[in-house]
Image (cartoon, rainbow, N blue to C red):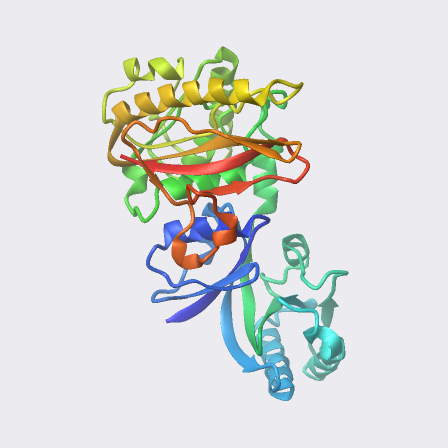
Length: 400
């Protein structure tokens, strides 16, 4: 059994919800923006990081020390760097660096320690370089660019009360690939807005929670826009993908974008059906109880210009209630819906949607055992947004 750490993304609660959905039986131990968990089998960390939208780094926890035992911590750090350097000594410089999570008290003498290690490595005829940053934490970009995973070493120190855990980074989020899928796609629609690939991954993972046979299932995005959710579903290996949108342009954009990503990554999937349809008439285009997962960001209301939020909420409640009634018909028993409901915030007021869920069961976005009560609303769903935003997003999970 090995213990792994996961560095959570910019919305830690949403990142943890994703991990909890994929590994529902795991007991997650949280230290700030990092979680630990034991796994019976060794993780395929490279494949896993490519399928996670909310995790920045994955690594292995090597040991832990009392904070009072600084000498033992320093000796372990020194020996671990030398051991890895000797193992990876294939010519060129050996790069290593430190990241500190949870406290600003520990790093004090670590740069002196790094200099001492660098001197010791020289005695082994190993040329080395200390990778540093202005921040306490080395970013994924720094780790990637300095090859700290491939041939080098990033040691992470997680300070929790009177204990410090030590781990080595195994892989980092593929930020280049995510950026290419977001900004490099041939058809973009900045005016209508596009869901980021990372959020699309998280939503899909919330939908397929604990399902190891998800690739054989059918996933639908009935508000497909420029096809982000469809693209990420294809990358995750779904064999049956359906997309629809009221907009003819959106259907065209989705078709072109998914052709582009499948050609780029040599994905052979011919069972992708994208067509134009009003969501309220979708049951005429799709067989009853034929869809396993519905994942979407619907129309969220006007993004520009002022409109009375009471009118917007009423309009969207009607739209969403009608859509959920259709979803209930085409969703298989046990199937899941993951969608975004907007919340409007202005002048210290909050306007929430409350559409009819039509016999669907609302599930908590984040497991109560994670004890993030201050981040939950009465529906026990996660809501996020920036303080200056008028439109916030509520992640809603429903099942039939």
